[in-house]
Length: 262
Ligand SMILES: O=C1O[C@H](COP(=O)(O)O)[C@@H](O)[C@H](O)[C@H]1O
Image (cartoon, rainbow, N blue to C red):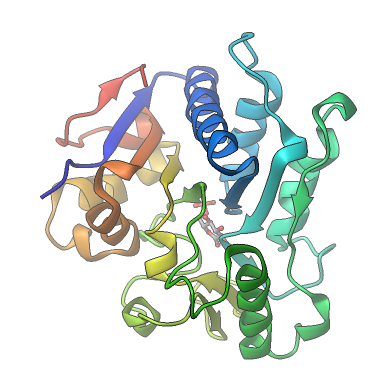
């Protein structure tokens, strides 16, 4: 039995962002030592705004974000055009990519291919092929291993586009899965499968605001919460998982949180 996930809590978004920055830098530097590239899977929702603060504003001189060596993938994506309001790519682009100072380099970004917007299965298959091309063929590695996965937690405990009770949670083979009836709009999406989402070298969750406190209590303090998608990643990835939360998001949570430090 490994160690439990790390739960770090902060009084303010600024303090959370500063620690998240250190966490990302640490993952980046280890990855660059290993293979001179940093492969990151990012989510949409509330995450990109916090991540932008961490990467672009919270610089205390403790290390450089080397965006030129980043490869950015999407932990999940909505099957909409890349310039659509619901697109996770658009969100990440506007919050982060468009604001990177030129001297920090240009990341290589892997958005979905808009050609397949009408066919979610084809979209998922094509995105999986993108991962195969980067992470090695499926017959040589069982699962792609991201250097870092940065995930959100929905108020129902979903993460990526893996929703509570979904049969997709039982998938053991595919790397990327299609969804045509997401309970949260828009209905058509693709998502990393649970085995891939649990397989990152490091996995960082960000959850902020009082709207998350009920689900955080379930995930960390109850048996049924451990069966929710976020809870399953905690169980499978254990100490490879670190949660970055603000105090309102963990009000009433009994699981021990480390306050204000990494
Ligand atoms: O639909 C989605 O929701 C989750 C959670 O979003 P949040 O706004 O509650 O943080 C997000 O992580 C995912 O990428 C997105 O597609």
